[in-house]
Length: 215
Image 1 (cartoon, rainbow, N blue to C red):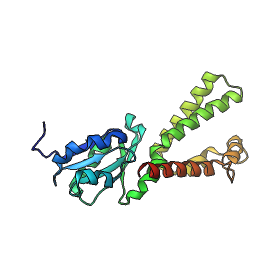
Image 2 (cartoon, helix red, strand yellow):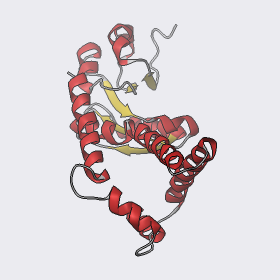
Image 3 (cartoon, rainbow, N blue to C red):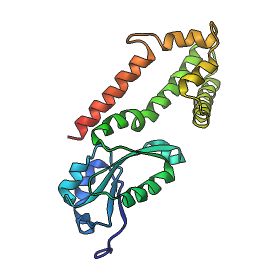
Image 4 (cartoon, rainbow, N blue to C red):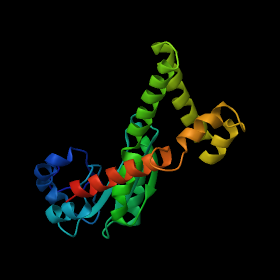
C-alpha cells in the first residue's frame, strides 16, 4: 500500500477500455513530484485530467510493438504541469524499449498512431504480400516466405544502421532499366494504384479512426 507516499512515476499500461475504472484510485498520488505516464492508445490528456484533476502532471505516450525487441519508437506529449525533470524520467523509462520523440501539440498523436503505432502492421502485410507474390512467380511457399521475411528484416536493419535517407538506399538498389526499376515503375505509379497513394489513404484512415476513438 503506497498511501501517503509520492511515487516519481505512475505508469498506466492497461487497455483504454478499462482506464475509466483503473484511474480513480490513483487520485491520491497526485503530487507535484509525481508524473502519470500513459501508454493507453486513444486516451487523451484531457481524459486523465478529468479524473486526476488539473494539478496532475501527465504524459501521454504512443509506443509501437517493436518495443518488444527494444527497437520501438515512442512519441510522448506532456501537459503543462510536467517539469523538465519529469520529462527526463519518462524519457529514461521509454528509452528502455527504443527511441523516443517529444511533441507539444497533442493533436498530432492521431497521425503518430497512423504512422508508427499502426505502422508495424503495414510492414508485416508487405512481408505477407511479398511472399505471396513469390509463390505466384513460381517459388516454393517455404522459400518465398523465408526470402520475404529475411529481406524485410534485413532491409530494416540496413536502414537503421545507414546514415543515408531511405530514398538514397532505394536508388542504390535500382539500376536504370533493371529488374528493380521495372518493379518500382509499378509500385510508384501515380494515382490510386500506386503505393504512395495507397499509404497516404491508409495512414489517413488510421488517423481518422484514432480521432473518432478519442472522442
